[in-house]
Image (tube, rainbow, N blue to C red; front, side, top):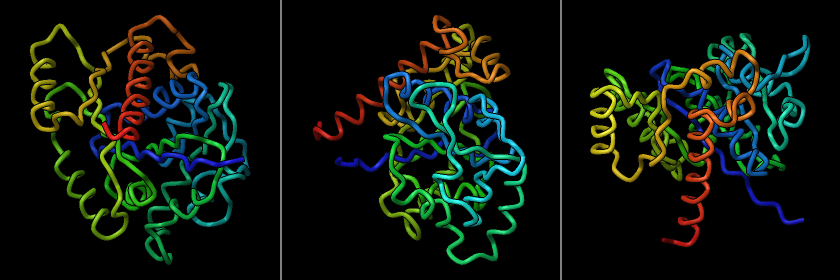
Length: 263
């Protein structure tokens, strides 16, 4: 059977609280709902992606920490979730130690890339990066085909984004020349405030067509879903957060089709 290489997307922004993990879980789950096999890779020691996807890591089970150390392969680490077509490479707090341990390892920037190499099954791989520009994020960028940048519609929305773009340029220059910007997704939008509308205008003026049309709103059900270990569309299909991420998934797929057609 002909195997198509999965598209690996690093979801990154070193600013915390911008919706990285929410986007990884819910965008990945949206593509899975469209029957696109999708793997989430939790590269954040906080492991919120792991719990948000409803996975509990049993003692002794290999995680992304073992993956980066080379002690386990991705086939051993990835586990199915309760949701069809959605699997996960889980994390635990142990991963915090990898940042230090990687410094002394050969090929330290390419540990994730090498682990993903040749892994078959998913069409899409989303990597949840920690809120920093350390070696874990660099591993994600070195392994990725593209970067998706969530930016929240709040004060200082663009703070730190120039640092991320600088890191992306460095990674292109030295580690991964083909790394692309998948796009910018606006999150936590509150239509009742002038500030949110101003942020949308500012981000679109800076990034232009790289900004997705779909804007993710502030939504109580979206905030509640992770505590139940499920993506928002499984928690409340009709809520605004669910509709937004399903729309974002459709937009992502349509962008990919347009690029393949050369439009």
